[in-house]
Image (cartoon, rainbow, N blue to C red; front, side):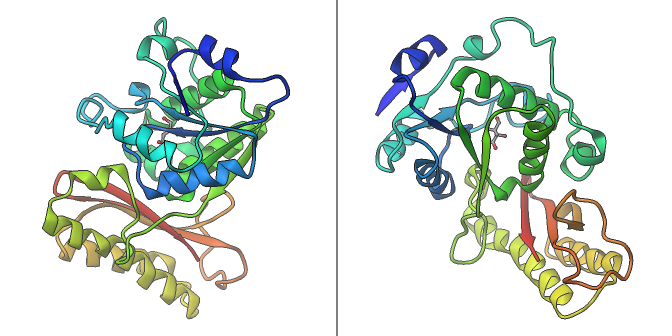
Length: 279
Ligand code: PAF
């Protein structure tokens, strides 16, 4: 496995005709990321994992400085799961000058849920993802469903900007208690780690209620919010949405008539977690 820092090195390492499958990450890798890397192998001859903590997607009050940087361990994990190249550009390689051109996703998709709580987030994500696509020039790129809205935003960006990239999505990897693997789980204390599984439990309860025929979306969302608040969380949102565009399903739409997803974001102490379940 090669560890490369510059676009010039990356271009030199690629043989003509080789099809790159890219897994963009911010490092601090866990089994969820490794499943993306294994999936990438099925979509290209050369698997590139990028590790870049993108300051553009963090608001000034967020955890950019604190975000765990575990480069050596990440490389060991990647070497063990079939990654060919780790692309770890410096901040100056990605942003050699102030980033005046940015990619703004439409507010119907990117201004809701995560975008309502983190207004600059998707601009930061879309901008760096387009830059990584241009730098790495992959034929395919793999993203996890754990960041469901991010996946939809990137999918619509690829479609609308006609980027010649196959977008592959991968299922969320969970602990045995249901907690979705996330780099931010590392911020949780031992007791918070146990408590964190409540987020998945709240979504599962909601999914079961929908599957059993309930269509009172707002009441269901409210019940889940109350459950989380009573358990000591500070929820930002719990939302039952259409999978296709994250729009709210019409009142009383029978479940099963259109694919739905339930999404939540909530804070446990100072750690903000997100999760979702397709219904
Ligand atoms: O999901 C992430 O880790 C990041 O948002 C991404 C896609 C690598 C862009 O920085």
